[in-house]
Amino acid sequence: MKNDSIVQELLLPGLEFAAPVEMYANVNEYVEPHLASRQLVVRAGGRVSFDTYFNGVSVGVWKRATTIDSLRFVAQGSGKFILRVGLHRLGHSHRWLSEHEVEFSPEGSVSVDMPWAAVEDGILYVALDAQTDGTLTGGRFETQSMPSQDVKLGIVVTHFNRKAFVVPAIRRIVEQLLTRPEYRGNIELIVVDNSRNLTAEDAVGATVIPNLNLGGAGGFTRGLLHLIDGKFFTHCLFMDDDASCEIESIRRSYVMQCFARSPKLAVSGALLREMEPFRLFEKGAIYRAGHLRPLNHWRDMRQTFDLLKAEEQETYSVYGAWWFFNFKISEVKSYPYPFFVRGDDVLFSILNGFKIETMNGISCWGEDFQLKENPATRYLGLRATLAIMLVTVDATPRATLSVMLGWFIASLFSYNYSSAEAITNAIRDVAKGPEFWLENMDMVAVRAELAPLCEMEKMRPVCMADYDLVHRSTEEGKWHRRLRLLTLNGFLLPGFLIRDATVFDVKSFRGAFRRVFRHRRVLYFYDAMGLGYVAEYDKRRFFGAVLRFVRTAYGFLRNLAQLKSDYRKALPGMTSEAFWRKIYEAELRGE
Image (cartoon, rainbow, N blue to C red):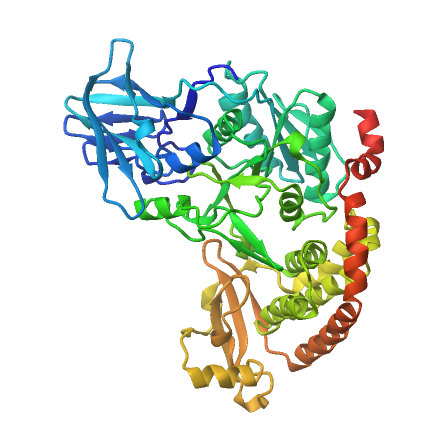
């Protein structure tokens, strides 16, 4: 690693993303952010504080995961300032740790040692009070510590028919990272093109690998094999094809690996909402007996308390999602399972036993998952969940049925009968055993079966004025709830008790059962994009779906012991390097 002293570079607010200024710097009325040039123009009396998502130093993570034992702050700009070093800690009063009068040199820099040995956790940061007019054009935190290992990082992006996103992402990574002298030769970008439609002009600065489309699992595995065969790379970073992140996130994950205490370290990037860029969707995640739960869901990354809570080590992440996942290649013992998409990242983390860390400032922005939820994603999600349960936990009949019912009822009570049918299809297909996955790695037949189901619940442009909508609260009393559940959310009631009206509900992973109850129709609507669809109360489809589910689930549970045995026996072979090399034999030979 060249210029290995840089730990974090100061990120000033810019135009590239929609993230608010407060995620980069907290400023008063005498500070004017110049977004195009990423500078802060400061008048006398101006105050800039970097106790923020992108610029606070997460003491606990850096100390726990790395060997860094010293820290210094260096800034570029002009003017005279009072520079203070502060510390926020959860459950403690704020503290100022040091204060310095600084004036930028003619070369435009100042340097201050940080009290690194005196802190154990919390958010360490710098604040500047302007004594004269001036500017801040950049900065960084440096260390005199020596890296624990030499890191050669391969960034692997899997692409499928999203040129409008991947091409700008390639350019951003190349221009802001790969062309920098200290990273040239140490970091490379590999784009696995599952759609085979990227041109040489699209990929300037990146290695593009045209690939057989076996989904994300296949694409990322193909990229990993390329890194291994190059005999040069030590680490791999899986990323989504829009790479919608500050490039500093990539650089920080690289630095973490350079100073890693453990070879098992894996850096998992958080996911922030594109529609609300300061809002966390997930920063770490856990998996328990068939249930996935995002950690730090819905925290506001403009608020100090939420920043501290997001770094709190309440529980360790069990897996890291592949929108951003950085790991050491030599620690990979089990390769991805051929899920196509959904579940591959979960099982990959579990089987390899990575020590997963997350950190404020290492993240991507992405679309809301609830917007993308449809019969296909529900099929893929439950299919993967059941397969993972069969190979990783003692999947008892009761626990397995509970998971199945949870997915099924969520769709059924929401009037999403096509999703309910897709969920039953998932149970049916997993019950076919490991051979099903081998015969359907490309998902062609499965996607054809799902296509008409997805059409019935497709999000389309909606004009709210076209509907006479009923707006209902989700609050209800204890006896009302019991009645609603006893009637299967109204499906056991006589028809004359069902109101011939359309109720409004927000598009999410399922309907709000209290709102839907006793209404003939529900409009699921996603306000940010003006999209939605109408689902209708239909007793015939409801009970038909229930009957098919009962038959399918019964067959699955009756054969549960044999399924667990079959899946566990097949797992080592289906997650081996040899398995994937055989799948990609022709492609690897032609590379």
